[in-house]
Image 1: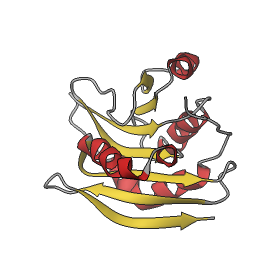
Image 2: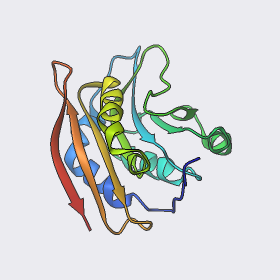
Image 3: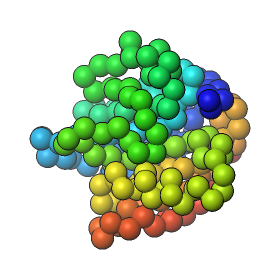
Image 4: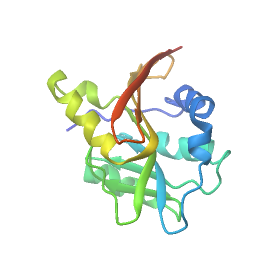
Length: 172
């Protein structure tokens, strides 16, 4: 069982960074027959971070599909009342629970990998990257309990399919 602690606005600064750094990716149109999600991987005991990000990111793309993913079935069940046509919650992990025609433009996995052994990090990055569209981005990092201080790896999927470390960001 993961700790799953979260708080309202914990990842607000990360969202602001994503809006500045990757607004084009969030706005990028996709074919009508597909979905390209923003994924909040490991949203915690409450769905705050997923719902807050959905509201922020939909300011630049009102049609953005959002997927909250958790490994705890009780957390997913508790979040389901907040689901709607564009906001989904599913049980899963790094092997994202996508359906046919679904892909991912942006993954935020915060305060997740710090619970794993260091030897497992590269495999987790690769698994997340497998789901990204070319040019897609994974923000994998950690924050303090109130989101005052955070850091993350920026991992971008190249046109050739490789997942490349694009940078490391520290925010306060």
